[in-house]
Length: 123
Image 1 (cartoon, rainbow, N blue to C red):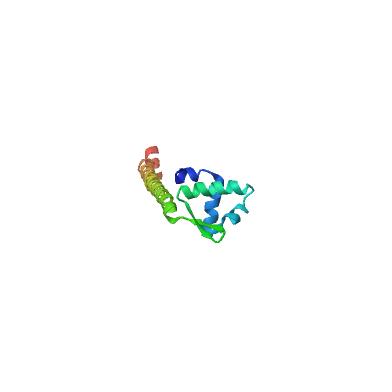
Image 2 (image 1 turned 90 degrees about the vertical axis):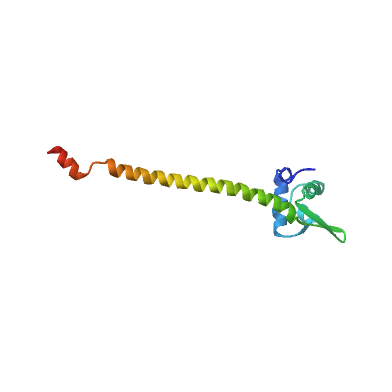
């Protein structure tokens, strides 16, 4: 059994997840959107189901697939943690860069000769 991350490592499976994020689809509808065989799409759907990312329900002779909120939530939570981590780091970097500009500006003002001091030095 693959983890959600292993399952999402495949481009076709990511595309299936994107399709299911918009609407529920039958296995046939999903297969019709790809240029791979129906058994190939079925294998991808099985991997996504086993990883807890999608669910399937029977509707007469068809299987209708949808995203599994619990599986997607785990991925979403991890992404939010990563974004939060880097967001804090980038905010801190922005603050340090602003401080550096401010310090350089103050340093120039105190060390650059003024027009008056240049004239006094020449006299």
